[in-house]
Length: 118
Image (tube, rainbow, N blue to C red; front, side, top):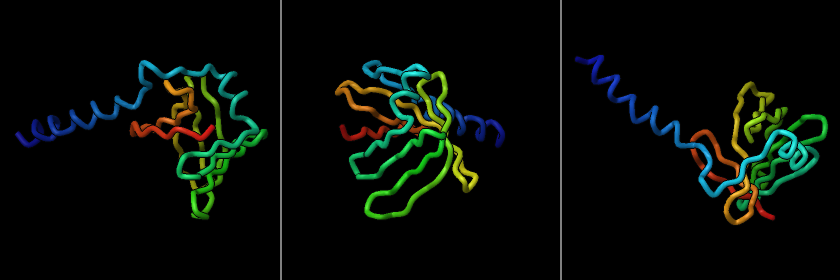
């Protein structure tokens, strides 16, 4: 009985983890287009946080309001995703799309959407 309840309790978690994909109105990148768009570039989010993608594969994220900087290395994948391995050992993969308003938007694995400034 306990095992059945535990398994049923995990179903909503598994279903919610699948909702992080793009919307129908989003445009995906292929690997070379995403690499061309971001390698050597800095993107700024609406909270003034900044992601910088260096030509040599280094990555930094500078938090808004001088909140510090995270350092790592990025890899561009075929499916409109970029994965980052931070020097702390943490890693993440996010989906990069063009949203319906034409903005570059980062979608996290949790489904959070972060549009960038033009």
